[in-house]
Image (cartoon, rainbow, N blue to C red; front, side, top):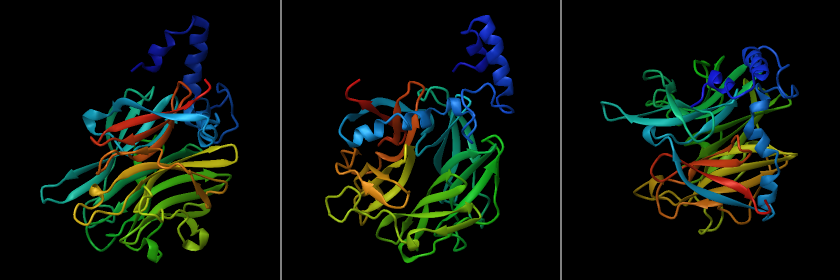
Length: 361
């Protein structure tokens, strides 16, 4: 992976000087950036936002673009999967989940970080968010993160759960950071299960902020179905449920619908005035094998307000040809080549990707 200083050698001397000072001043002034309109840092390097604004998802919805699955895999050596990503100064921060078995036979799920400059080669940074010792509310799970940065502060919203009845059903928890690496947890949960459709578990949050309003889309599980709900408010400490605290996306009604059992982890981007979501779905939970015996795939939906969603008529857009996990945990990522990708967990437990391609280019 090229370092910033190595990249300087690729430029003429006069441009080296300009780029060097831009890199030094990047965190304190927007003058070296191509645009200062965005509240996000490093807008000139936000490849995901660029790719989302390219019109490719609208083209795909109209049948004018395709989704081409790659044979490449990423993060095999450290089982990188279930990503939440953020571009910062030409570096893709990729937060992912990891589950380990403890000496007492119990399992613990935490969050690690991998870094990339091209979306192809990833270096494992290691753990950045772990549960506190039991009986803490996130001792069992401190993972399934969603990460964004606003006004110089990084926010990571994650699913927390304990081994005890303290938070056995999961809750949405928050941590903040100045650099995306060292995180400080907020003491109290942001949200706990609050309705019958989510009484067994909530989690896999998606964090979105726009025009001073915060939105959280998350899954709720009632023991049979896993569906999506939404919270919104002027701050992450002043949230209320939208849609009368009812699901904003429900399972497919037919037995052949790919999402008839669950709708879980998702990723959202905005193209003009339309929000697009890629999301994992599955058949109902297997009676003996659990969700690992279900049939998984990835669907597409669109909305004008983040509350009312229309599913793509030809869902799923990606599907595991076999029973079991895989083709789940999708994440929309724009790459330096201008393409919009879906990164997702493959059946072997690492990450694969598929690329949206314009049929006329």
